[in-house]
Length: 256
Image (cartoon, rainbow, N blue to C red; front, side, top):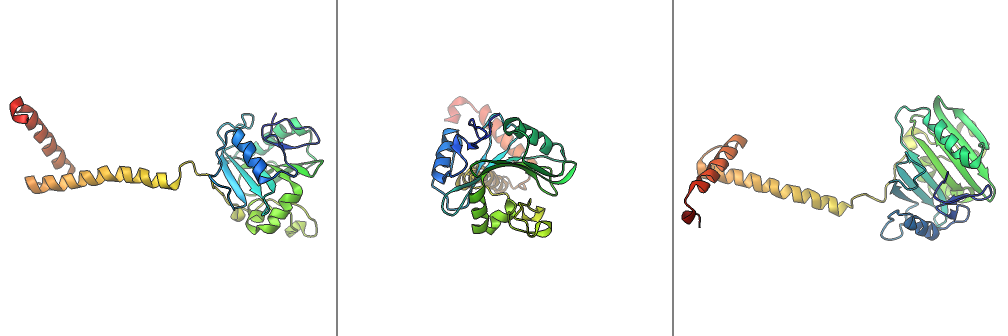
């Protein structure tokens, strides 16, 4: 099995062929472009880039979105795959088994697969970590490949990242333990910086469909004034068909 398209040994977690620990935004973006992901036109200043997954990588079927997070200094922090699910409580177990096929048994697992938050993590040498987790209210499962030090720095730099991706800061039952916690439902955000259709094209499509609509309305009112009929659909249709039939019944020399 391949995570992030690449062969990783027990001592290296790769993200599309780039070692997770110490990767930069430039090297990750270049690797994603080679893998067929269309990135932003220019380098974003946001802490994340989001891509729709359409079969890349092929062995992570079921993933719908890839979110790549960076520190303010442009260091790779987390590559996160989203596996959407509705009331499939076994999904997290299946994805844990899929990751275990490559990395072996998890370093630790917490939570109940039947309900509630679940976290399975593989702590690898070099400061990299693989994490499969599920939040409190949804069965959607997430798979993270992260540079632990960079991810912690990113959460400190961007409070929104700490809420959306969980936090390694002490909170609640984990107070006094520097332990990562899944986000609560109200904290989860859905960043999307790589729109399938740019906004300007969406506006253009709307305009293209509005023009015929205005032409039809104008034509209906024109017929209503000429024929003194109300601009109803039946009336417009009946008059239009009648005029066309009358035109085709005319001799050919009169149509010129």
